[in-house]
Image 1 (spheres, rainbow, N blue to C red):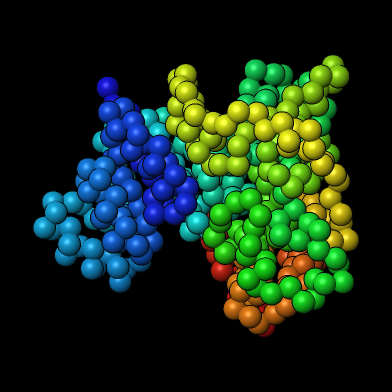
Image 2: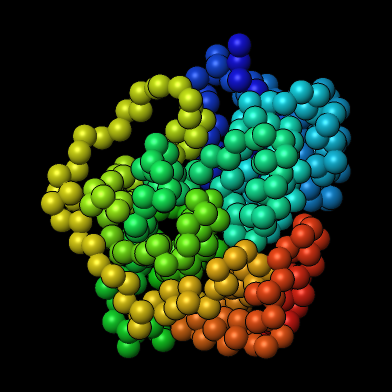
Length: 384
């Protein structure tokens, strides 16, 4: 019997990678739903290739265009996620939620009840809304599958272990394009330089976050949430080749390390086939990298974003939404050419230390609306 799946954000890089995997194994999968914000042309192409009958296009302008096309193709097109019950009369087997940004939070939470397994490739959802996600997972007995390379690697290393036996967890960071750049040159960094990641092909926003290491701050928060591990057990090491993704040190002195090639296909495919053996045609061991891992502690002068970890509350709160929203808006200002590169951290640090927003460390998110409304408010408070 074919596994029934849905892909939220199928026109993005994660969605396309998953579709590439499924294309080579069509006989085992039936895609029930794919979604996009505005790229209806790509969505219809995907629908044709994979015989998908349900599409969601959230941008109203492009939804209306798609509606007219869908009539001729006998495809259902929706403008939001209100019709999930109609699309999924029974629980499906797997959902990949890869919608970019805070917009991915509500769909991720709402679709949990309709699936047996969910992989969430959306940092904002896990960072800002984990308490809500966790409650939904428990309520509907849905299994959560880590799909980010670092969190998948941690999960793989500790899945048969007792969490109490963990002494330290290390995630790695490539250091992005500026690992070897002199600090004195940071004032001169241009947008094109910041977007040029040495190992991964990513969108503009995540590329900037990678260059500042804000992405690692968010990944540490994700790890704290997903694995219920305190911040004092989580560390970051720079590793330029992005071959080693996680190290777990146990109290008995043993250490597990998880390596894999620099491709998201491996964690994505492992999440898709998580309870089934399969063969992945990966490269042989890269001995050149293994013999020169070049692991180092993060240079906090060059990457001061990491200091933000010291400002985080131990329990999940709305402060994480403040952090995400402020960073998103400040990075937008940089990409629009309105501020300089070295102002990203300075502005963010000043903002999150504002008394008006520090109070959110004591407030837990109780509803999706708490997070969405705060996100909007924070963005409006940040001006050029």
